[in-house]
Structures are given as C-alpha cells and as structure tokens.
Length: 631
Image 1: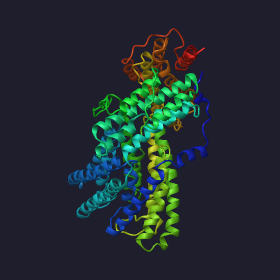
Image 2: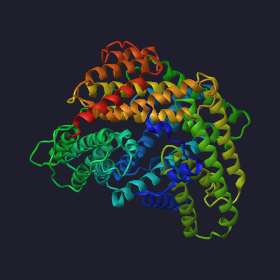
Image 3: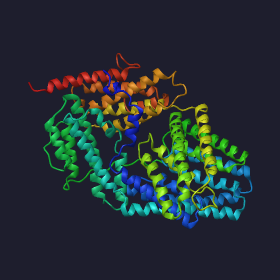
Image 4: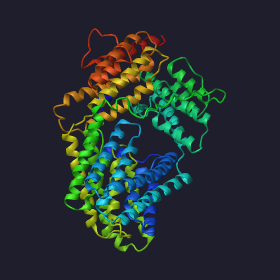
C-alpha cells in the first residue's frame, strides 16, 4: 500500500506562490523591521558620505534573523569578523600588492579554503563569508592602484559593515522578537496540531512539516534566550525537555490517528495540556509522552540535562569524501574564469560576476540551478522596481525623508519575499540587491540617489554572467546530484525507525523525522536537476516512493513499538535501510551497517523493499487495532 501523500497532486504555481507569500505570525513585523533598518542605513550613509551604501543596506538582509538573540550575535560577530578580515587583508595586501599573479593565486587559495571548510567543517557559511571578504579586499588592488586610497577604502569598508550591524544590534535589543517566546510557541503549536489530528479535524499529513523540522531551530531559540539573559540554566533545560516531549506527543498522536482514527476524549486532554493544565495519563505511547511533558514542567522534578552537542570541527569524512574537494575546486574555477573576464575586458563594473560565484555556490546541480533561477528572477523584478523609482520618483526626491520612504518601500517588498521558505528566500534577497543597485549610488565618489541606470545595468549584467559561468561549471565538471542525499537520509530514517520498533523504551522518532525532513528537501532539490533527468526518471521515482514509504513507517512506529511482531518488523525495516543505503554509495552503506545487524529477509528485498515493509507494517497495525477494540 502506498502512502496517501504519494497520490496527492503537486500544487500549481498560484498555490505555491500563495503558500510562500501568505502572511504568518510575525511576518509583517519582520518585513517592517527590515525596511526601517535599510532606510535608516541609506540615510546615514548619505549623511556620512559613506561609499558602497548599497552593500551596507544589503547586509541587513544577509544578517537579519527572526529572533533578537541570533540577530545580536550575528551583528556583533560580523563587526568582529570585518575587523579581523580587514586586518588580515592589510597584511596580505602588503605582501602581494605589487605581484598581480601572486595576488590572483592567493585569491584562489582563499576561495578554495573557504568553500572546503563550508562543506567539510562546522564553520558553515561563516567560512565562505570570511573568504569572500578577504578575496574582495585583494581584488580592490586592481581598481585602486594608489596604496593610500586603497587603505582609506578598506577603512571605509569597516564602516560599511559597522553601521548596518550596529543598527541591527541596537534595534534587536530594544524591540527584537523574544527567542524564549518563539520556543514556547513551537511547543504550543505541536500540542494544538496533535489535538486536531486526534479529533479528526486534520489529516496526519498536516503534521509532517512540524515533525520534519525537528528541534534544531527551537533549541537554537533556547540557546539564544540563555545567551541574552532571558532564561537561566534550569528553566532552559525544562524548555528543552518540553521540546523533546512535545515532538514525542505529536508523533504518538499521529500514530494513534493512523491506528484507531479519531478519539475526541484524547483530543480534549491534549487541548487542556496545551493550556498548561494537569491531565490524567495512560500507559500507551501518547500517555507516556504526556507524562514526560508534565514532568518537564514540574518545578519539583529535576529536568533532564540536554544531550551533549557534537564538538568535532571537521566532519567524519572531511578528508576521505572527494565531494568536498570537488565542490571547492568548481567554485575556484568559476571565480578564476569571471575574474579573468572582468580584468581582461577592463570593466570592473561587472565585478558582480565574481561576487555571484560566492553567493550562488551550493552543493548539487539542482541547488545551483534553483538558486540561479531565483537570482535571475529576483534581479529582473528588483531592476524593474529600481528603474521605475529612478525614472519617476528620484527626480522628485529633495530631502532625506524622501530617500527614507523610497528605500523603505523597496526593502519592505523584498523583505516580505525574503521571509518565505528556502524556495523563495533568495528571490527576495536578489530583489533587494537589484533595487539597491539601481537606486543607491554605485560610484564611491557619489553620495546621492542614483539618476543614471548605466552603472546599474553593468552590475546586473555581471550577475547574469556569474550565473551563466556557475551553471556551466557545476553542470559539466563533477556534476553532483541530490539523489545520493535522498537515499542516505532515507536510510538513516529507516535505521532510527528500526531502533524504535525493537523496543518501546528506545524511541528514536525525533531522529527518524529529522532525517525524513532532510530527505524531502533533497527530493525537492532533485526536481531542479534537469541534466540527465529523462534517463534518471525511473530511478528518481523509485527514490521518492521509497521516501514516502519511510515516512509512513515513521508515522506508524510509535503504535507498533513493543507490540507482538514488532521485533521481526524491525529486522525487515533494518534490512530495507541497508537496501536504501546502497543507493547512497558503498562507503555510506558500510558505515550504516555498523549501527545494526539486520537479519536477512527470505524475500522481497530489492527495489521495492521499503514499500513491502510499509505494507507489512500497515497489516500489523490493523491487526493490533482490531485486537485492542473492545467487543
């Protein structure tokens, strides 16, 4: 039996756009906050006669987060990073300013190091951001050959970072969104959704996004709340425990709905729990999860300490997996091509081609194609907004107030789009950049709104050039597909589900759903991989079917755990995980097999193994439901 989600038709373009652009709690506030910050930054830049005002405004989009704690940390961190990067850049420039070839080689080395660390270490995007700043500082020597002017330009570069980040930190301290409140909202939303599912008001599929997002983001809220002094250690540990148990309650509610259908009394219990009331508990999985949540809230009980976070700097396969080196080399090749083109035609106005190589770089071809598409569309929309502003608004702007409202309007529109999901977030970022390029001065000697679209046209041409080069490089050189990620994450989810089925006391449902979320994301990215898509169609359909079946197993696991027949089913799920792992590569399959020792199945192990096990699980679940139904 296939997962019902499998038969759900794909939403149309209008439905997707509405899903991405519709209002949600906090979106209006955050879009307004972004708009006011960008407008204030632009006005201050004009007053201080600060060059690169458009970069300063764009940094707001880059650094803005949905909670005050993270915004403060990133703002302070970027000021510190800019100070460090400019200091290192001064030293490096002193060594290579008169050696163009050595400077070019150093740019490529920095690019390789930043991109490799991004993929292979825990630094994440901070590594490539630091590499970009250092590389950009070295590139300035090609356009500002006078050392004194170059030094002054680098000092102004620090101001370009400090002004918007200072405003972001100050405004976040005064009226930023509370990370503690956001974490509590996650708990409340899970309990409300569980109540609606058990009551039959929503389908089990409606909980998928809450289950798949896991606890990572919410735990980040708790960490930020502690960091800014909003919570002490013990309340923070209690809230972490609430997050764990609320996820378990939602999983158990989904399993209950799968096995027995609606249960109104249980739904009322969950609603009372969401309101903070004490409720009676039972011995089933849902009752145990409710009891754990109430224990986490009880001030007379010591909260369970959080699990230790992984501390390794490099990933386990950092120096054995060639994908990381291939990725870094591909970005280096794209940067080398665009840098050579910019210098070869002696037109630094299209240097945005080089910048694009840094900010479009992603792991797979599908990700690059998706982000490049968003960059092109955002560039066109933002350019249209900016061109209309330059032609019809700027000629009538006569004071700082007019500039403030103009920048605020464009930033609000772009910010609203940027506050969507990963599917459209970068579209809003690119709209903002293109709008700022058109409206704000492009020359470091101009400190008034732009009235000439020629410079903006060159910069936008550079963006399109960078996208073309990146697309060609990532499509032709070591093309990387998301298929392996889909298979890998599906296999890890099945492994966690097998562990849950073996014992009612070993619930790894959170891990299973987190891996399912990563697999779903990779499957969506896989849809953007057009090169070779026709030949790989059957294989990709099999991967998606496998993912749907793994999701169904994860939904049923809490109800099946500890029941007669669940141990044998766990062995089948483990064997199916081994089959799924084979698609992710021999090395991953070998590493995964160390986590369990699956018993060989007598039949049905092949391409449809996971679907077969899903059907067996549904049959067992029906048998359990019949057995537990009172006569």
